[in-house]
Length: 320
Image 1 (spheres, rainbow, N blue to C red):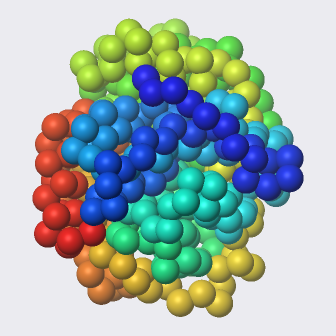
Image 2 (image 1 turned 180 degrees about the vertical axis):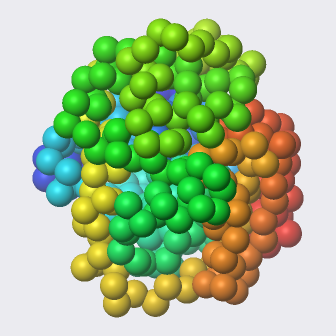
C-alpha cells in the first residue's frame, strides 16, 4: 500500500492520508472518502489504477479510523466540520478542486462537500449509497418503512451499532463481524445482518458460518481486522451522530440541489444499501447518471477493473 502522511487540519485535529500528485495540470485529482468499517485501504485498486493514468489521488482516513482524529464524543462528528477538515487538507496540498468520491458512509461528507462548497468540486461519484437531501432521521420509522418495502428491515442493524456495548462486542468478535460483512453469500444480510437484533446475534454466536468473498485476500482481511479489533466506538459514532440528527441545524436551510455532474454506481446484490432506496435522488441532481453492476456492497473492491473503466469513461465524457 502507498505510504501514509499526517497533517493537522485544525488545532488538535489531525488526518492520516495517502496522496499521489497528478502528473500535470490537465489531470484532475480524486478525493476518495471511505465508509464503514473499512478505511482508505478500500480504494487501493482505484489509487493504483488512476495514479498510473496520471490522475491525482487523495484518500484520507476519516474520523474514527487509523491515526486520524478519533474522538469518543459523538457530538464532534458533524459533517460540516468534516468538510472543513477536507478543505484544509486540500489547501495544504494546493488542490483547488477535486472529483469527490464516496462509498457507504463516505457519501455523507462527499455530498455535503458539494452542498457547502460546490466551487471546490469538479464532480461527484457515489458508490452504493445515493444522495439523500437534508432531512431529519426517524430511525424507528425508517426501519418500519424498509420492512414494508423490502420484506426485511434494511436499517435494523443501526440499533445494535447505537448500543453502548456494540463496540466491545465487535472488537471481541472482529473475525465473525468481518466474516458477516465480507460474506460470499450477501443474501444472508437479509436475515442475519439487517433485521433488528440479527447482527448482534450473528456476531456473538457461533451457530452460523459463512464463506469469505473471493475478492478479499488474506492480506485484505488482516488490514480490516486491524481496524475492527480496536477503537470501534469512534467508527460507530457515525451512526450515533446521524441518529441524533447532529447535522440538521447546519443543513436545514441549504439548497438541496447538487450543483455538479454526479455518477451513482450501485450494486445489484447490495441487500443493505438497496439501490431502490435512492431511486428519487435524481430530482435534486440536474446532471445525473447511474450504473448498476453485478456486485454486493463493496463494489469498487469486487469489480475494480469494471469500476475503473466506468469512472474513467464518465470523467472523460464530462471533461473533468
